[in-house]
Image (cartoon, rainbow, N blue to C red; front, side, top):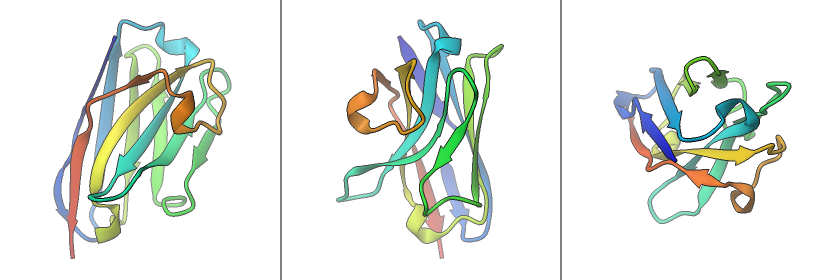
Length: 123
């Protein structure tokens, strides 16, 4: 199983980035996919989820209205479109997968983690 996240980088506040996570080795359409992030010295926090069946999306309060999660089952890929980025969005972003997972996905419910991609937002 591999979750390969990419698309991170250094941007200025107010700019946008798109993260992608390509999955292999899993039956992608049966997995709820999520993004978490971990800032330096902090715990890994939930960012967004898209469910495996209804594609219902859930967001952390801190990103709702600015970030959009989506998935393409034909490409086994999940995306995170991040707009109006803020310095506090700086973190390593991790892709996560949970088979038949609920939208309210917690860290303990994740079956597979990707290696992460660094997003740095300068002020």
